[in-house]
Image 1 (cartoon, rainbow, N blue to C red):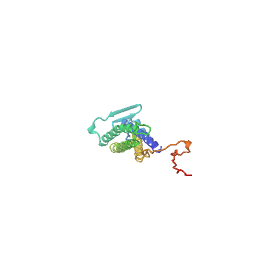
Image 2 (image 1 turned 90 degrees about the vertical axis):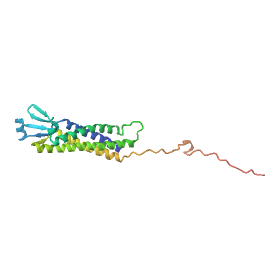
Image 3 (image 1 turned 180 degrees about the vertical axis):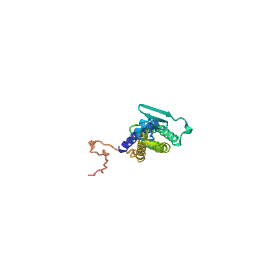
Image 4 (image 1 turned 120 degrees about the horizontal axis):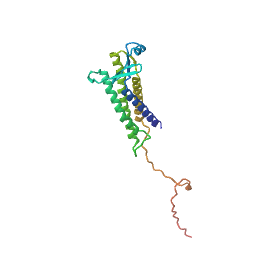
Length: 217
């Protein structure tokens, strides 16, 4: 029972982490850039944000973005972040499906629990790879942006990527560890004999044959 609860917990935590990776990949508010203070940049319409896909300029009531389409001219940290986040987002979908069909509450025919545990371990390892992709991207991108631009603060997308990475790492560890030492064991069929209570719980005795010698008078 404990092992099943851990597997379900690891599955839901992994799903939340993967969704965080997907949201971070699809949005552009990774870092905010400005040469002055926050209020000054808003008044001068110089508060910008940057993500893997676009650079945006934030001002009062407007949100203007320029898509980063020149692939060969992009810095290495932007290209690496794009590649790793796409890999993590795409890889997470079959991993979640694999973990879903490996849960103890879902069964297909007479599938043994040992094979489901192997799939769960594989899914946990793949989820750790998703977490690795997210961790490298969410750490390298702000460092690269700070070296290239005047980094002022982190954005919503970066925080979402960090949360998704932590949840994916935690869920992958739970799934891998709890399934490696599963408490399920193969059942053994033992021969049992059931007797009626009328005989006092004992099997009926075989009729005895008494051989008596005839007495000669």
